[in-house]
Length: 124
Image (cartoon, rainbow, N blue to C red; front, side, top):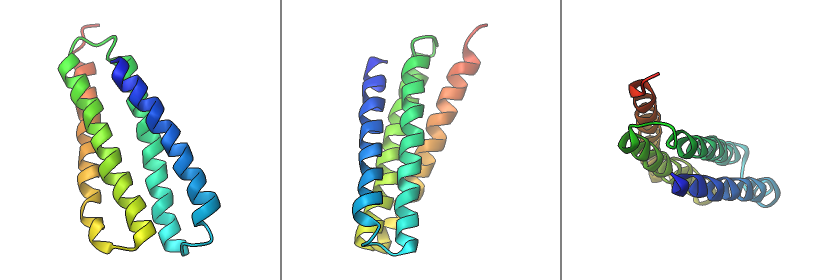
């Protein structure tokens, strides 16, 4: 579970850096719509980075370790696919990348579902 805590910290670091990049560098280069797309990528990046920290911490207390691991990997995949595709879409304007974004959303949903099932299986 330590790997997910470290990954969560790195992902949060990158999320803050990419948010600052957008706020200071891209704000004058992107139109309002693409800036909104970029902002959505940063928001989901950061929220799921915190989620990854939660996975790492929860995994130390939950017996369903396999489900917790799946949850962590799915959140990482979601950040890459969802936020990554939005970053690239906003910067390049390549609309075809929008087809990848929902796959990231599905990965987020599956990750949270795995963590919920792991917690549900835990004996009180």
